[in-house]
Image 1 (tube, one colour):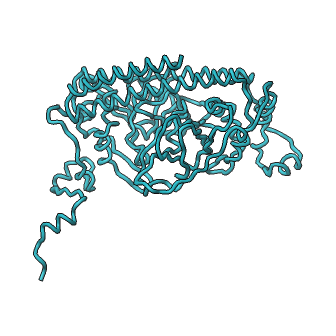
Image 2: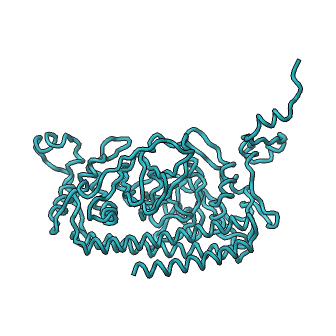
Image 3: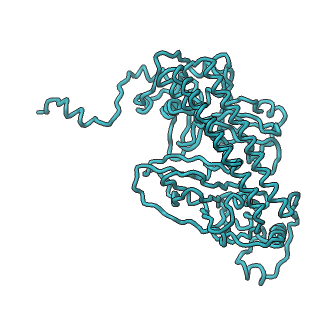
Length: 494
């Protein structure tokens, strides 16, 4: 005989679990016939005082990017990929090119204000959204097929607001419930994104969001100019401003001075240009040293004692400017390569595809920050500013030079020892100081840019949680606080 139903015991067993019962006919209303539980159990935040509309009803156009082979030789047009969106803005520069026809270019060229949405990648990256603004050179750009272009109807929503909504916690919740996960990949159907309901906020609040985005964009352009000035000064001091390496592809070596010394037989290792790089650097009039003489290699491991950790992987480094983002990863889901604990002031140098210049300085205190083992982590120990070393390693000269030590075929990497043994110039203190000043000012501008974007995101969350009036009031208060802080910072820098 079965036991009678015990409601209290049932509630106890189900505590902590989300349950939602729906009719089969209800599941058929979804375009993708969703039967996964997360789609129906995710609790969404709605403000009953605000009108909502489906994103698809607020768009003039949505379009997949072009599917085509890409190259790193500058052939064709620069093409955006999924890892070139950071902090709700599309990067100013990209790594790859695509040799498309003039007709294809007209179809896929990006216009200022286009919104790019990443529809497929890892769970943390899928759904990443950014507004495209042209760089100073107005270089024409296109976008790859794993991105989707959204063109909003500005009479309903503007590009910046759409981007913020999809990037705030409430938009992300919608995207997560609509995503589909497999073993190594997560996807979101753009048609599902169109089904998401977005609050139709006032034009005044949306304009405030747009203004912050455009100000943030101009700040990063100024930051880029400062960084470029630092790099120009460094290369000028080395006498390598217009240096063009040899393209000679033949180098004759004795066995004793090649394999007998280095243990390398691959022809690429002995390209003449690498000898030219070395000769220029070791001939520097103020002398040279090795990286290991001014930096320690950080190998600080960690015990998994928390529920989650902030984590940086290679794709979290913005190769355009050296800034970084991080994701809070549940401890059980940390990749096997999450190996090194870092602190404020440490420098990360990618050992994977080093020609991209994925080099970053940890410039803020982030407790228990963990980074991928694919980074060499350096910590300055002598009077050689980390800003100078970061700029040096991100120059075209050093990025190309690092390739000399590539090992492997399908996944070529360089080793910690190769980075530690790199010759580096001993710049005069005046050069160090100017480079450090320019880089720090550049970073300060980028932080200000990010703060503007973060404030835009928070304002939208407040509008959804409370009201538009509360969001506008918070923005005004935040602006006054930021201006006061900026004035104090400017005085301190001077």
